[in-house]
Amino acid sequence: MTLFDSPSFANHEGVHAFFDEKTGLRAIVAVHSTARGPACGGTRMWNYASSAEALEDVLRLSKGMSYKNAVADLEMGGGKSVIIGDSRTQKTPELFRAFGRAVDALGGLYYAAEDVGVSVSDIAEARKVTPFVLGLNDGPEASGDPSPVTAEGVYRSSLAVARRLWKQDDLTGLTVSLQGIGHVGGYLADKLHAAGAKLVMTDVNTALLAEVAARTGAEIVTPDAIYDVKADIYAPCALGATLNPQTLDRLTVKAVVGAANNQLATPDIGRMLFERGVLYAPDYVVNGGGIINVASELRARQTGTAYDPAWVEAKLSRLMETFEEVLDRSAAEQRPTHQIADAIAEARINAARDAKAEQRQAA
Image (cartoon, rainbow, N blue to C red; front, side, top):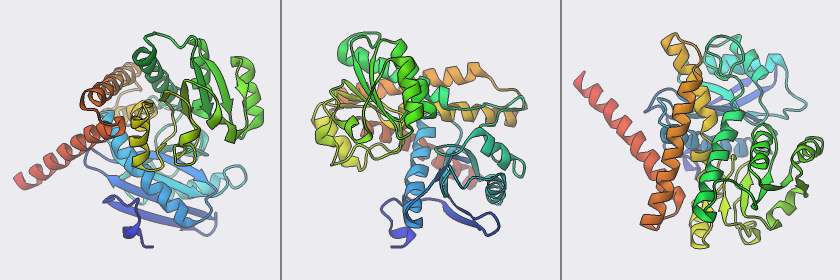
């Protein structure tokens, strides 16, 4: 199967493969759209079974970033990068400097930030050789770890869902099955616990799982058992595609609100959830807080100002208004939420593309 035959190829503007023999870097950068601005999206380091699997992941994730950035009303396009390798054993400073040189070769077409398997310190290494990275810890424009803001957006979305389905302003009496308590999931667990939710959680990192469970009073289950938990809300916060034909019949929840990207294995899963009366909070809408935080760093650089938490809060509040619009339109039009969110994102991307085309013609 060639790139253009891939079911995940969605008119991407560019897909770039990079290899560095000295460090062993094998990376793919996918630029889906630059209609709204330079492509921005995180870097994922994962021990993919094959380069074909890595390609499929980066294609899907980069398209998702175009939609996420558009729904969050950011002046950024969508892109993503993946590094093939085990983040626990194969990370070196030299590897991330090689990755930085790869990003730099794109000349600002794409800005990289953190994602699964990649930390702020990793991005700081890449920053030594390129300005085209975001999510740094030092400097007046530095936005730092985006995970807390991502968690805040998912938390506020959970409260919005609780108001809709259970007519309450907190999560008291509700059970949330939380899958993955890494960077975002751990912050989210604390927020959900403070709001009164009972938590049932799982993660492959058993030491971290025990730590988070101890401070939140959560029940621990094995990774596969999370789908069978009797819960009100399922919160996927690990890798994507956990909503699939194998898990759908096992879930008993009334809502899905989580931080993971690409939660639907295929779009028809969203339709099935809707037909079963399960409220699906579109992942790239509710988890947009992190990229808003990252965008603030790019904005600060472009304007010569410092990181502005008030700007981040205003954008996050606006995103929550968009989420409410998605829920309203889904109910009024009797259409699945993911279709409504896609329509909003596509309209914004197409409007930006048309405006650019008109500017080129006028010039």
